[in-house]
Image (cartoon, helix red, strand yellow):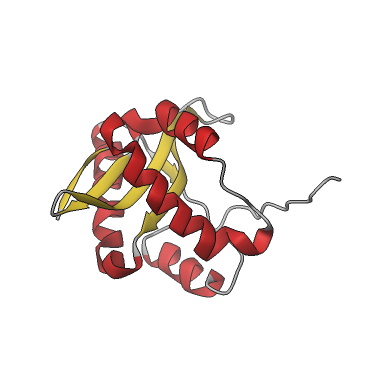
Length: 145
């Protein structure tokens, strides 16, 4: 498996992976996938996003951006999507650790990761804690009609 920065040429495969993620994790929240919007998002974050590649196929993505912490003016890496295809989940931690190391090299001292509240919440909370994360906040979402 190769882990590398996302390239513009990866967008199409990343969109396919994101569609899998939406179906698996966001569908229950009524989230739909707008391909144009997703492509626009990847166009903004691809320089700070990473992919896992096996046999020339993108099988995982950790997309994020570098932001400035509002409280202390330090750079922070903010994940927007971390997803591995079901067949390749065993490589997810390797992708995460690669991105973490890249952040350290860039002098970034903090990462924020998202966790959906669904049937896998407890597993993900335990994984993040095992990786050294602390739970900081919970976000609430309300559909406005």
